[in-house]
Image (cartoon, rainbow, N blue to C red):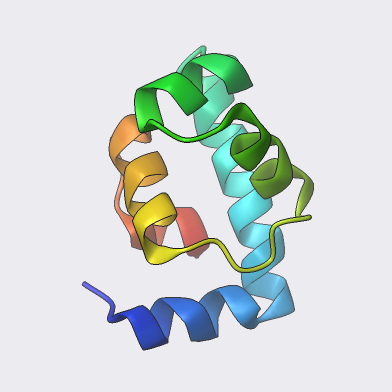
Length: 81
């Protein structure tokens, strides 16, 4: 498990941001989920998922990463790497 500092560091890295965006979208589609459905499962705003997938949200909180990872049944590492 990463510390808050490590997750912050990773998501500040441009390649990690691109990985996060691609991974969230890929995993969401593999699960057959819409962005809206994933947002509900993760208990985050739909706009949060949209911004994560577009790469606009370059620094999601650790809590958001955990919620999305849990909703997708993956680890935070799998989301950001």
